[in-house]
Amino acid sequence: MILATTGLPGFIAFAGLFLSIFLFQLKKYRTSTDNISKTLILGSILVSISFHISGFFEWSFGDHEVMTVFFFLISVPFVLSKAGVVSLLPDKSY
Image 1 (cartoon, rainbow, N blue to C red):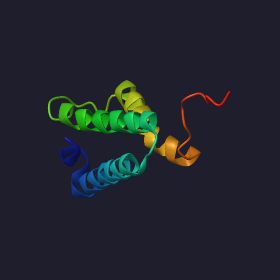
Image 2 (cartoon, rainbow, N blue to C red; image 1 turned 30 degrees about the horizontal axis):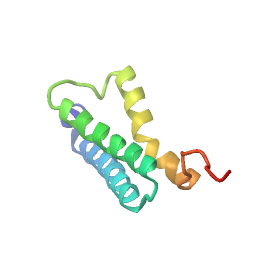
Image 3 (cartoon, rainbow, N blue to C red; image 1 turned 90 degrees about the vertical axis):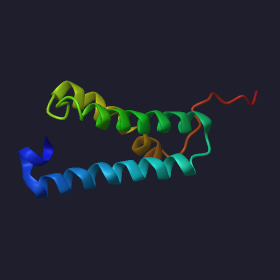
């Protein structure tokens, strides 16, 4: 559907955007040491994969509500990367 609506340049931009996001997610998953961060990043990767699989059957990229949730969920590795990998568990040094 992207190819039909935006043409070849739009499709190349779309594919490049999501390929770069997917590669960034994989990189952050491999380099993460915190188990909770790793789980959140894995969830983000699975959301990205499931979004593209559902895109075969439905035009979900044009739906505002779906895209808001999707971009929120795929932003998790970027947020964890920007914050530094901070442990999400409480400190047990008491």
